Image (cartoon, rainbow, N blue to C red):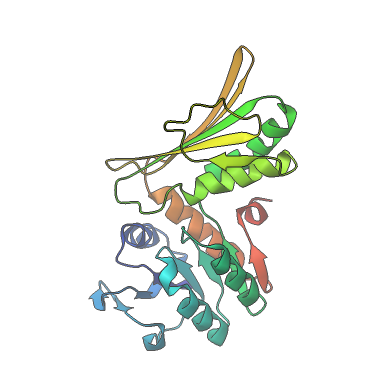
Length: 249
């Protein structure tokens, strides 16, 4: 049984991971990390990594970037793999992640849905094959999500851009913009409302034809299930950085 330290354990995604783990006999959550220290069911949630005393095989993080450095140091000290699902990471954060991956394996992704990662693979093909088409990205999430645009929207843009020889640039708003759309711009639009688990739409618009590729998350469970599969994949890996594309090979 794979023993998990769950970071962000009392958040919305943390509670979803707990629910999915309860339905899966391969995993057990032995402890958690959150800003509130409590006993949650049959495991302790701590407010500090230094308090963790239970056996841990892998850390799964659905929390906030503010604890990233403490988490990386904990994993380094104990040689524990990290499944990193935190969004809103900065360039400086990614530098830290890359540095710490020399000491333990890290699988980082902005989205752990298997469907969205397959979608990412195919939009790269479309972006290259339809080189004259304009591209727009629309993402929708619940009204509690703090970062915009979503990490997934950024991930989709980076995939598209890599297929166009990094010639594209993002535009996040066209309010009161009275100039025509530039050829190499990609509009990225964020909507927030209700309990939308997550929707991402990529539009390829050419002359007299439009192709739309859309992924809709109907519950948060798909992200939890993807993170658990990623954890199982990561356990036996050597130190270094991994992503969902490595897992899906």
